Length: 486
Image (cartoon, rainbow, N blue to C red; front, top):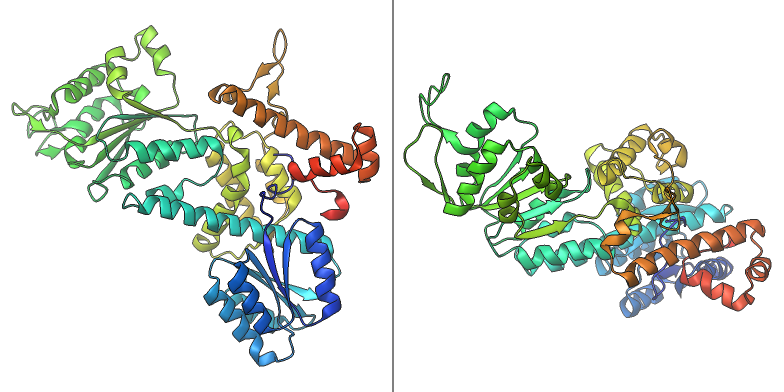
């Protein structure tokens, strides 16, 4: 994603701006409208509440220097009560930090001192606030979706890209049906998260969720771990032990790295799936089994069946429903939401107070090629940056040691005999793949033209063979801003 922030939606974000200084109010309105926001101006608390109730703004920019200083904290509290999801930023005079900190403790997202001298930083604060609003809106939508199924398990699957929407839709479809599910995807894409969400969205979500990493348990111990054993079944078996299949009860058992399961245990698991029962090691009596089986792997099981490393009949049993978790490079539009999700989490878990990420840093995260470890790698980079940060802002220098190289912009990769498509594009139909490639190319082309023209829109349009109004429309469509507008 080659732009420094998410392209605005079709309906521009709305901002309630409250200030009794008409010159400043006019300047703020002009700057924000140029940046693509819809401004709702107000000069006092009464007008502000009226605008808020009529328009339900996404953001609120509230001056703490209105005529009645005692009423200003009350106005912020009123807005917070009336619009709990609106992200509030306060304006305060220079040297009045105590009032600003009090506003932050009252729930404001950030503050800015007036007179405003650094308009670039002001625009950055507004863009970050809008991203936080988008994350809250996404959480609300997922909470509503999950509540329809009596669970909040889908809340943690963050993103509004088409591939991740398909994952959520499939989870909702199969959550209430007790069939085996195979979760496929590269390392670090969130396969276990999908398995847990599937369990949490199911009618048996109150039953156990048991996860087993087949690659982390020695082969000689794995059978006993899964099936349990009777006393005296083997040397060292001094008492009866219930296996994890039994512990799962009527809940869900998740076998991660299923491709590492030894062939002997593959045969036993196949019998369990066929008969609905299993035996502890050394037992003569079968135990009924009714848990849902979810498996996951980043290996090509079909190729493994050809070499005899994985049983083909077991693959058919496991693959009743398969869920393909997309790699991060195929859902780059979700990266800003994921970054803010991690910032919010680590602020709470590590006691940090990060409120901003610079546009160059966010742009670089969006362009990076995360194929080594996908979302897990992105999460690690954000956590490290937050631990090392000495202020409430994350700059690109904090990510320098953890950023992979940039990914190809146009979706093509060089290869013998000519360019090859990114593998992820072949998971989309022709129309969707074409739209993704065209969007990436268009953004990169427009930004490059503007850079080469020194930010002069008229010159960039001329060199592109476009009329200036048409070039402006392309900029708006693909979420590109000229340097003077950022």
